[in-house]
Image (cartoon, rainbow, N blue to C red; front, side, top):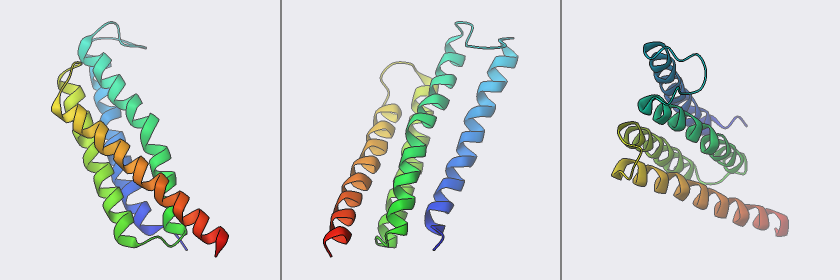
Length: 133
């Protein structure tokens, strides 16, 4: 079985990663920074948004795919995938505007962590259930 629900959300997130990466490239070109951030605040934030995405999203996608392969309810995969996409959009929007506290950054992080928590707990329950049953 191909995890088609996870594929859909991973594809949306892939497009978001491309957008975040294009923003980094655009800012590097604008500020003539070949590598690193050149201490340019907007570029530093753009690089962190992109890096933070790369730190959380791949593992979340792996969890979603494994849950889908384990025949967890499709509505749960859709819910987790949608919340992850919204969370990453909010995080990117919030951190892009300010390196300090922002509601988008806070809520985006909270939603991302919530997806990881729920997916991990569902994975534990599913794994134990399948091992015992």
